[in-house]
Figure 1 (cartoon, one colour):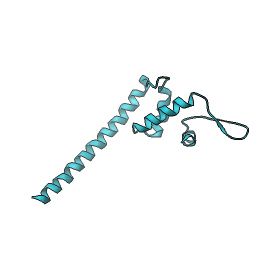
Figure 2 (tube, rainbow, N blue to C red):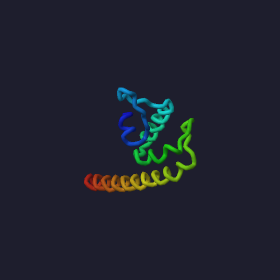
Figure 3 (cartoon, rainbow, N blue to C red):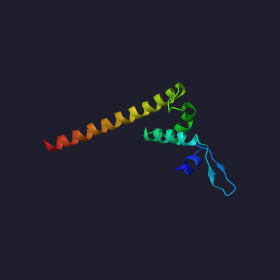
Length: 98
């Protein structure tokens, strides 16, 4: 997981003389924030943009709001399409039972 986050540019790590990754202590909180944002359904690309808007207490700063509103709108569109598809399928089922 940490390697993936590092490869995606979400966290940075220094290297020891033997090549082991050395993380700054603040990386722990950054990883927790990344995991919360992933759990909220946000793609890594958006999370990368949001990292500067997250501070110590995992509070999102106002700079995050426009990005989150846009992402929420895409979910609303997807939900509406799925709801319409569900209604159409339910209509077919109901018609076949009549």
